[in-house]
Amino acid sequence: MDACLSVERELERLSQKYNNIKEHTDTSLAELSNQISNVQEELSKMSKDDEVSPLQLHLLNQSSRKIKDTVSKLATEHKELHGGISKIGKAVDRNFVIDNTTCSQPGVFDGENASLLNEVLCEHLLRQGRLDIAEELIKEANLQIDDSRREPFTELNRILEACRERNLDPALQWAQSRHMELKLRGSSLEFRLHKLKFLDLLKEGQHKEALEYSKQFASFASDHTKDVQQLMACLLYSRKGIENSPYASLLDPVHWLDICDVFARDACALLGLSLESPLQVCITAGSVALPSLLQIRQVMQQRQVTGVWTSKDELPVEVDLGPQYRYHSLFACPILRQQCTDANPPVRLSCGHVISRDALNKLTNGNKVKCPYCPLEMTPGDARQINFY
Image 1 (cartoon, rainbow, N blue to C red):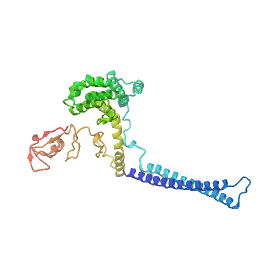
Image 2 (tube, rainbow, N blue to C red):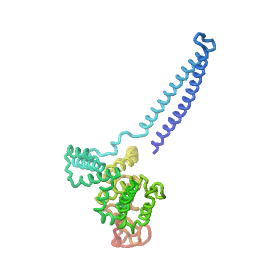
Image 3 (cartoon, rainbow, N blue to C red):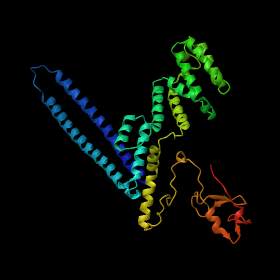
Image 4 (cartoon, one colour):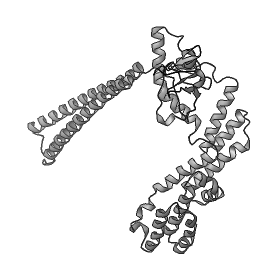
């Protein structure tokens, strides 16, 4: 954070200098323009046979000198501005570590891991709809990816592309074929698709077709009563135009963007896929954590405690990535200050306090264990393993 603030201060100085130079340049050029206009006006009053008077010659020489001085001064200020830009580059080099290899493991993507990385890249390309690039990667990397793994992404991208072009038919067919699954998940995707289709028919002036299509809302009336009432009221303004009615907000283009997001979310959930690409999540999380990791490594090297960071699956300190990257509950033992794992699960004592299994074993004295937070004594067998969800 300090590195970012240092670079930001240099940037603010440069921005202030740029604004000052711009203001001075505009003022100087405006004065020169006025002076040249005055000289032109003075010369225009002369006839072709008249000679230039000493006063006019003096004004011309004075204007010429002022133009040269102004141009020279502006060139100097321009050079100073370039100096400020170079200072920002030096501040970036000074405050940010270019070599990030100290936080990486050599050979981590060798052997079987290289094939795994290529599969992750291929899945990301399929998610993004880059099917041709994904196919080329499969060929060049000799990946063995079944068609069953490709087809869901192909269908998903085809439907999303149709939705972006305001063609809801493929999405409606997909949702109707999975009506019960979506209903069990509490999804409103199918209703929202019918809603957009109905409004689109009204907007196109197909009133009879819209009235006939409104029968689709019958099965959704109990869960979306208010929405169905508003849609039926739109029929009253079909001749006048919904855009001139109290329900004009229903035609907002943002609803088309929302339906793409809702479809992608529900489709990924039914297919057992994460909404976000795993590759994108890993890169983003790594970018967030990298400054902290570099700082940890620098402190360890300065204090010569290289043996602290020896575990492959655990960092010496906690790096907070934010709530958007928390996918499951975590529990850190308050006694050993270690994150619990499957081999060292959290256990609940009779008094209600929770510690780790390793801490329980260390606190056990004979056949008795005393809670570290209250004076209650119990036997180790009274502790019960708990799971956080």
